[in-house]
Image (cartoon, rainbow, N blue to C red; front, side, top):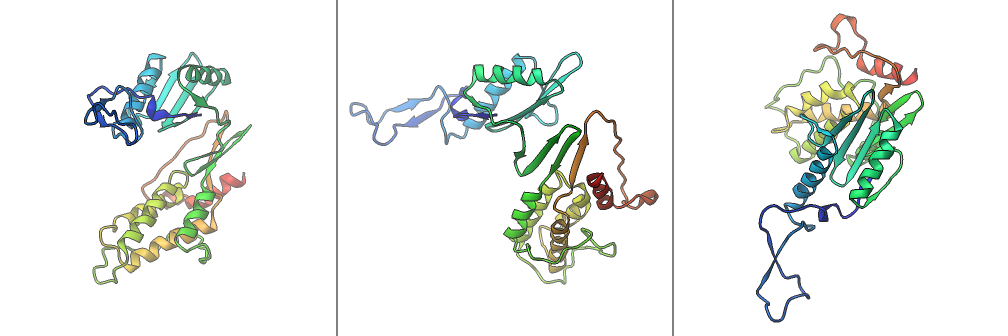
Length: 270
């Protein structure tokens, strides 16, 4: 759902004054100012005021605020759960019981002016495909856009994000590269890790050299993009009504574990 004029819904606790807007000055008191009782667009307190009002409203209705992510709210029922995620004026929500979603929709529309956007399919660069047997999340469109942004849409694909023989260090004798471009590429890759754990190690390793990137570091980063070009449709699969275990190792080759890319491909294909 989307909140209309969200920043006008917030209440301000401190005293805030604004000048009279051009064209609407009071001829009798041209030097007077207005004292605000509610938030306005462009006011630096507006986002906080809106969040506080929405947060207090949800807590009053029985929701619990996330301890790690304070924009996540959870309401528990006997055997069900309702989860609400807030991103400024956009709200996504889901429940193990569809009735709770309908109740939440009515609750919000009764308090705020809302627009229902329908079933979640795309959110902040994440593509969500909901099926009867589970939910699949990937960032294929975002990958395509970033490849075009950095001029790598026609780059030669790679089967792995990093060579097993690659050993990155400060490379103080190497040629310097544009740090702004390098940091921008790293920032994009870090966002990819939301649905692509197979590149997490490689991205974090390259991210260590943002202060003074060299040509060797840029080559390593471009290889990750070339790997993404070869595997744009990989993502995370969450099966419905199925229990699955998550295993993590500090070494990708620990115990003869398959490469993460192969594991993800097998999950997608299955």
